[in-house]
Length: 327
Image (cartoon, rainbow, N blue to C red; front, side, top):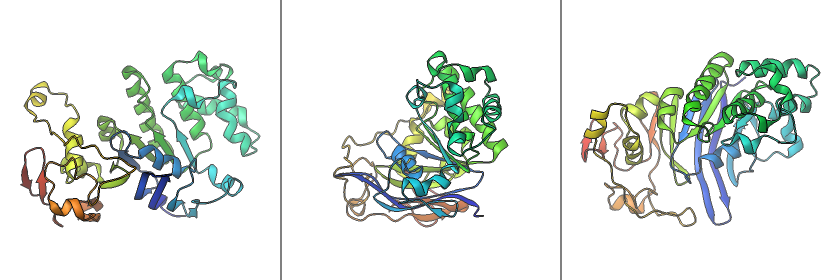
């Protein structure tokens, strides 16, 4: 069996003239967590929905373990469904209000024709920190954090190889977000599933992820180990994202210089030529406006970047200081 839980090659997803995803290549090893980050509208959730085949991609390939699931019919997908699950952003909207919690969590097992559903439901609820009696309740009787735990229990009851977590904490109160993140970290460590963690919360990424992929306007601009992305970010967009994230030290936060990006916001209907970030990049040159940058390896751990201004040794501009730095 492949050590890759997921292999996405040149993924494309267009909605008419809207080029939501435009050539994304991504790999996730079994047992690792890859965070997909970027601004709202960058195409992160669309990538996740293509992976679990809620959407059929316009182009490219999605391989789950060793199986190409890109264009399978619903019937052909059935044997592969147990290998991938998704947790949505809004638990209230993803849980059927007509069903009890037990029926919701046990639904994947009924589709698999399992006989021990009640026992498995109780085990799954305990695993996410809920009492088995919760199975008799309805989703509206639960808090937001409890509903998200139910969503996680449902997603993991079939023991998938890959979990897609699509902004699983953004709809929750701040006081609850940490407990759900801790739960995901514990479950991932104990069960060993691979995880695509889609988020814009960089503090959560730094806590949970092994690798990070940065997305801008439908394309990946940088990816690599978490230590490299947070320690020596190469792409100007990645640097700008990190500079916008607050730090816990007030003195350090006051000393930081904000990165001001251009206000020429591009559209996915008519993306800019060349590098898609050039309309907002403070260090763009003429080449950036005309030539599409290729993603290439610039450092250890497979650190990759798509930027004309970063050389093969990883040396390039730092928009936080305006200077070139050795990486």
